[in-house]
Length: 261
Ligand SMILES: CC(C)(COP(=O)(O)OP(=O)(O)OC[C@H]1O[C@@H](n2cnc3c(N)ncnc32)[C@H](O)[C@@H]1OP(=O)(O)O)[C@@H](O)C(=O)NCCC(=O)NCCS
Image (cartoon, rainbow, N blue to C red):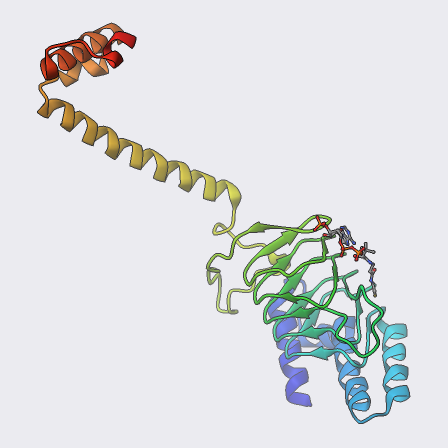
């Protein structure tokens, strides 16, 4: 039990830049208190002590503002930051190393008793403040849910879901390692790799490079056909004359393309 608490504390210190000491984490992080109490509530629930599980869960909610149903399954090093207003439903499953911010609901959209009604978060998912993840689908490993998103459909591993209803805005891209803490980026921000401006500039550079290479190939082909290629870089009139000469040299007759020129 203490090993688990120790790794919970270490995970909080790694993922929250505001956490300055172990003592501060132990005393001032309701997410930690809620997780520890949930472990007790969940153990009661699994032994069939349903009322006691619910009661512990309600006490944890009273103390922390975080409501985790005792039936919910949480992995290791799950971090609920700030936590006020978080609701995690009975059949929700949260994988290792997930991070959940305040106001998140992992809720259901069906009333089918005994069925799985709540989402499954795979390893390393980050759920932004105020997001609602509603339904029994899976959010893939390392996916990110934007603040206030309303997610009603599965999210692929590594994807980013934003908006209401949520749409996937990023394909799965390799996540860069930003530091020794397994690449965790506080608040789900991934420097550089996912930056849309950076991606757009790289796309433009690639495009320009391809175009330049194709232009060189075209010029080489024209030169092989006897065109005076330097003139193509000059005024439009010079280029027109050269193309006319080229077409005439090729078959002795002006062609349709030439006439249009
Ligand atoms: C809104 C709601 C009632 C719709 O349920 P539904 O009639 O079964 O609707 P569907 O699941 O068939 O979805 C219909 C469309 O609405 C969209 N949609 C569903 N729920 C939505 C929501 N909450 N916000 C925005 N869009 C939503 C779906 O994406 C779908 O869009 P599409 O046709 O373009 O694919 C339900 O999804 C919902 O949000 N219920 C509240 C659940 C809740 O608060 N649970 C908390 C428990 S703790």
